[in-house]
Image 1 (cartoon, rainbow, N blue to C red):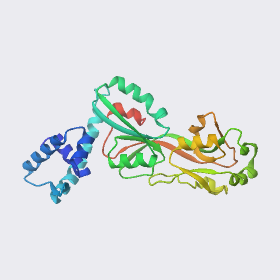
Image 2: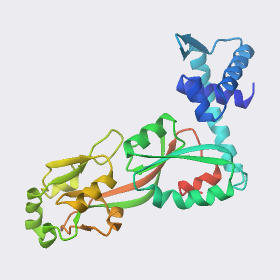
Image 3: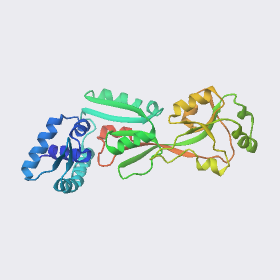
Image 4: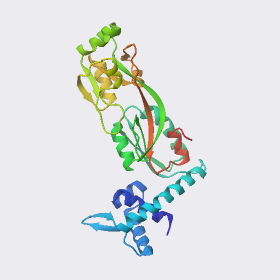
Length: 287
């Protein structure tokens, strides 16, 4: 019984699909099939049962997976803790980030790692935060960066930066000439752009900070990308709650509303039980 066999079996057990397991592990489907067959022969037990064109764990397979997973996780962690950062990495590292975050939190580190580990292929996707969370939790991605994920038993969450949420408008918007209570009351006269709420995200469309100050919630434009929202704001009379980092755009300004305080955070997430190699821990700031 070899470590690779157990790794291939456990990944296939999680996905219930040899093709998906092969893509995650970056090995051929035939290598996984042969490995599982050899493991079944050694154990004298059927670990997977065929259901049409699909496979599912047998009762023995399910029990075996539950027993070996903690040990494989512990071995993987021990390896990553002891392995030198100078060991050359290879294979495919799949990652994603919420629109607009990759430039700040991924690209500078990617540039360094690409030079240090030329055999490592980085596969990147730009997604909504909810999609980043879903794909990392499912194990389809090795790493993700997003806004304010909710706690999940399938995720390890690392806070990268606290971020203020601000109400933004374009420069020279009529609202910029108002202050205090008059400003809050006047928001209802202009169209609101609002982020769409998704499962797995802490901050929804109607933020508690807005409710507290009686800021109206009547969106006429609901979006799933801050990039799109900022473009809409810069070209029209929309106002929207956005992370302050998007105010780096020269066309947007923050409305100063006394007592308004809304915090979020940018987080790095990884699948539970899949430790990052030491070199790649630069992404999480835990190196």
